[in-house]
Image (tube, rainbow, N blue to C red; front, side, top):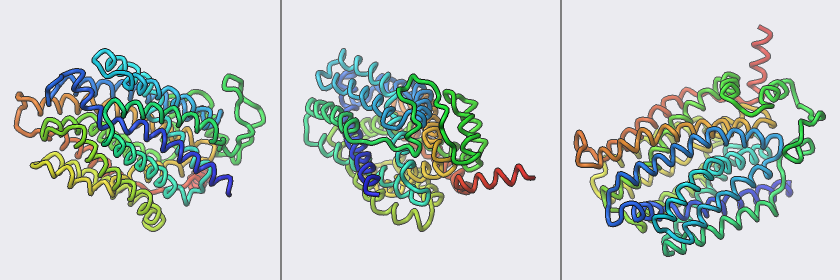
Length: 443
């Protein structure tokens, strides 16, 4: 037990440092992008379209790479696969740490697009699989909530640090911390898979013949996933559980909304209320503090009492309400007031991931989490293609009618669809799923 606690603490430190490095530059990126592309302007369609296109390309790559990394981690180990995304994520930060002129920004843009395909979703996917390896089903919702809380704490710390640093220093510190995170992970984190003795070493070796399976369901499902995961594999996994299928629908529309927020909200606030780096940092800081408190304190208490399904529905309902209010923001204080909803919206991802983890066996956690991450990445392809042009249109003088927050309202509608689907979910654990499968075969 003490060894498992040490392993989990090393995982949390790894996630904290990695998230801290990536998130502390977020308040500065809007200003850096605007300064490189449209200096002296508060509204820039080029910046919106470029950010949206980057998000779509990253989503396309991550949709393929993240399920592959999750699948490979079931065979080669979580730690081995964590090394790749954590290492390559250092490169874009180093570029902007050196210079933020237009040429260096475009170099950052290209390399960030390429590296994020393998790093953005993979680190979280592998961390969730690592937790599922070590935590019993009944405790996973709380554990996933704590992991999300660690990410929120990194968000708060990074945003607070960025608030008091210059833009140049922000990127320099982020690059150093990113390097430290990769080194810490390689030195301290231990492998977590329950069948760790059967891992392939090195990665290019063939399939070992002595892998033991706990039951027929694990053996049959594993046989279907031995190759690189394809669309057919994803469909097979979705068909294996009604609950899993419902969770993928929720993930699709929630990620569609989340991607829309990333592509539009900061530019909306910049154009509508002339937000700058410090105001972005203040807003993100409030969001992060509320999310951290909720995930570390409230979710471990509420999850065992009311269950992941209800927490998921509550989070989605509060999320769409948040977007509706932001879309109609009539004063600069409204976005700050809406941060109260983040106390509930942070329940969505841990609850969804916990529900998914219970639908598969212990040797399939990487595949399941990778497939959900792939669904999210697919949504991130579609989202900027919808919301970036919509935002640019309604922030311009040629808008068909005056509603600057119309795209934010549409994001709220996507969350509403996810909420409606979430209330239909009936959770079934992996053991229950096996029983249902046996009954079906007997019939």
